[in-house]
Length: 229
Image 1 (tube, rainbow, N blue to C red):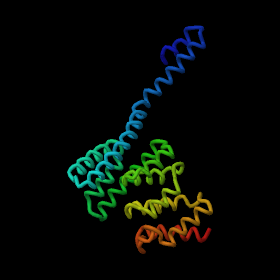
Image 2 (spheres, rainbow, N blue to C red):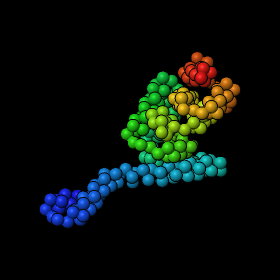
Image 3 (cartoon, one colour):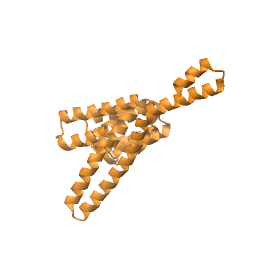
Image 4 (cartoon, one colour):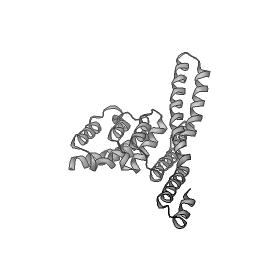
């Protein structure tokens, strides 16, 4: 339709019809290019809902004492997760398969870099990123924090506080702190006060920020900037 419309512009007197063909053809070309992405995005969302249901069923089976069924359901959920969120799935797999140490940290850092790259390649919707963080899956939370680091449009102050106070791991807490530090220039007075209170009161997992660690260094930088503002 795009080609016919373009030819018609030059060989016919029907300008309106030719313009319509060009316009419709252009829309179809764009739709064809985006169809796989749109279909994949929607299917990915459905998969994530199924992952959650499978994990809930696994918890129920474990509570009944049926450990075999629980393990099978978790394996199925993990397989679906790898299809729907490959970076998040890789994070969870690495956390399970490697002992804490420099090698695991380096590999996990690489996954966060992939999340940041994804933010550069695609305009993520802020609500979608917030849902990813709140989904409950450890890998999704890290992936969302990586997106927030790279793209200021999708940053969420509450997510950074949650990652600090209710972190699933020291790795997640570090990125919650790093995100809070990036957001400092745009925080309101109330938000700055809330962040300072969290870091000085040692509320929740904030009390586990041990002196001399990378997390402690970021926390101290934040507090210094807050006190000098």
